[in-house]
Image 1: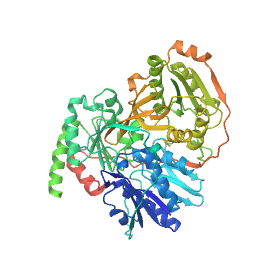
Image 2: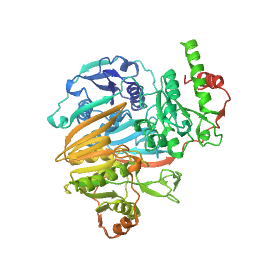
Image 3: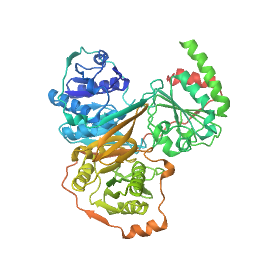
Image 4: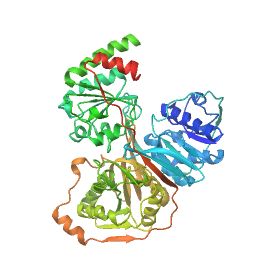
Length: 321
Length: 246
């Protein structure tokens, strides 16, 4: 059977977890087996059945309220062993990327991250995944008995597959070593959409001329319920925090919509946002390389266009609410 | 303090990506190789430990002789000694196993890796290495201080950061933030001259079976031309009715 780790945040199952379940169900159908989901401290797991999980292992343990790579890898590994999982599916969140290599060593399992679709074949087990920061794809065979897949965000989508899911409590054995590291503090903005979770990302570059002009970017992001991001020069000059830097050495973006404002489109930037589905560019330079990588573009002054776009989107949202 | 910095030898970020041999191999023709950017941030942090806390810094790479200029560059930046494990870097697990073999007897207090290499983006070597040698691991590390046998590491999490206290030895997967872009060092002539005489030890690999093997590569299909619009109403219309993303 296929085991999928369904991540939650503050007790709520994340959307990427539902995508991972959809994907796990796809593999289960290919292999003629079923999907078991394992969740840690999630309050409501009823949605998991809707996307194809037929069994849900619920772990409730206060010591696991904060993410901990070592302990979480142990929980998932023990669930996989108990259930006799042949394939383990995880998402590509920062936390899943943290724990997957640990899990792979524990399980003596081959691991392929950034997978973009169902296995091309299950015997040999071959998956396609992005490499060179989305500038290319590779087909890779996993040769071990147990296989671990890190699913790229937004690469499979949500696929409903109503299944009657049986829930049961699961109590893994955790030892002192799992809690070797002490969490001193967690500093997290809870009121902002993160780049990792965002469906829409509004990003701006040097064309904005200075950090004082970011108000209009934030306004646009707010109307769209989007995360804000920036290009590398902007974070290097300290106009915006590093956590907003997207690109090859910054954060990858795999949103449904990416709006680039005053970003010329250096190859490193384009690589980092390539996994986004629809790209819009607003730039006053018609020669900017970004126009070659975008789906829609407006050539013009961002300082005129962006506020106008925000106003019109407010009207649009009011009409379509 | 003894530090090992793991260095991946990768194509420069501006490289055109092509494949040869029936799309089974990366085409290195005309490609400039560099220290993996995420590793370079870590190497710079290691230099600060060397200068402020008298650390000894070793750098290591798993790869053929063609990767030696990249190790020499790390020596020119200030590392004391380099190690090359003489085997091609195939899958992440094999690389981690080779690194673990060197690290386990090396007496390192701190092993600094980059969060991921910018070529294969596996992001698995640091975590696997930590598990193989049985030490603590912090990924996406954006700040690191060491005092005695304890480290304080700051980790980037979705939407913020987390501060962790851990004992040494420790493996980290570092990224920008552990030092800033402006802190990166370009080797000077003196460094380059010194690097020529610093030890670069070649070690033979331990036996290892690849757990995964890449069969072929492909490039994304060329995309359609951009649709230029001249007003925001038209853009909203297209995003709603055609692209269906708002």
